[in-house]
Length: 351
Image 1 (spheres, rainbow, N blue to C red):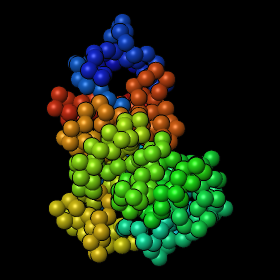
Image 2 (cartoon, rainbow, N blue to C red):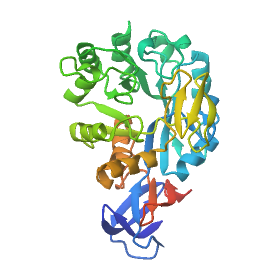
Image 3 (cartoon, one colour):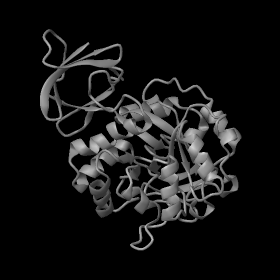
């Protein structure tokens, strides 16, 4: 299939798709689907999302979520589990994920191997020490979030790094412990600044360790979780090759205000802000596409914002997605001049 007159990175060109992949990009002779000079960007990759349109990943019902995400520019994602029982986590990860719409690449296991002090909206009842023998029984884990200061974490990180991305979050770790964890294979920060101590000039902690080293950093760019100034600072420090935009969305995304269940707890959404009954922020109600546009509103160039929501997360989890490049999966989004989504394509097929 040939697509003509696409604006990619500001330049008009054609591209060809075969067997679900980009096979040629440039001037291509012959007829094809004329995109009329509309902007084409790589499909977005959300590596941290708990749900949307009334569904939670722990419900293990993915069809409606995959549909909604695809319509909002996300072509692949990691359903993110909560701190619940291991039986429930196993049930979710063992569910058929072959759904139409945004492709499920695997799971992000956020908890239960975290610190009670920074549990956030996670359920304290199920928090526990890391157990690799237990963990390795879970199918298709692409990322695990862990608090590196918890007993047994270093041994866990050394083993888990060969299975998936090890990210650090919901943690009270010191700088030294964080640096040791990074040396042992941890390679990402989970929703930076949230559920961890703040950056201090004499006690840099996890954030300082992440800034110093070459690891990735997830950040929720919804305009609520992180101040604009901090988003811009992280963009300058980590750059587009290391900063990963995430939605951290929950089941109220795409829904109205009200009460929702989240990890076995009641969450109240008011004015699109989700909080626990104790007042802690409990995930976002934004899509990743909303986060991309918020980054642009803050002053980040559009191409950079898109890269941090597509190419960079795809590289982090080791998949050939997130780029309009020959040999990569043909997942892309066509935008109108005002950046309204006109169509989402997955493996070259319009969804």
